[in-house]
Image (cartoon, rainbow, N blue to C red; front, side, top):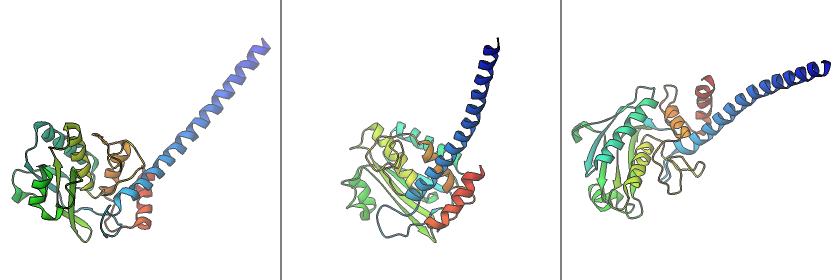
Length: 234
């Protein structure tokens, strides 16, 4: 009988210790995850892949109003609506994306067609469309984005690839304009992928850039404490 009681007490102690360790591990995992988000934000949200623009935060200071041109399929139209809804559900600083019926109402143009036809509309893209099935260009004043355009090649890319390109180019047009090799399932993966959904860390980057506490024009050192305040306050 004494042996049985002693054994029960030992098991109880082990369970208690394990429980305490588990809570510590959960806290530690959350901190590690936040550190990864911070580093990935700095990879993706500061500057551009090409050109000499400074590596600082940029985002839209007005709503993005999209006009669609070319020949989108029903699947692409549905996908665009889905992406817009996902973005709007992640932003909390008053910014939103909408699709408008007239180019005169818009400040962003999405073209579904061939690279050559896109280059006819925007001659500056002529040297890029041959090797890129999707492209975006955005413009800003005082680091506040205010207009842009993009295209998805509906002839060279298949249906899944078109959905991927639409999500990638539109999301990068928000100011998350760089690529990275870090996460295979990220929409910002540098290697060619066919990802058609945001990963959890992708959603975090959109949420952080369009958080009320996030400002434009912040470099790597300036953005760090703001990211920490947002992430560790939650």
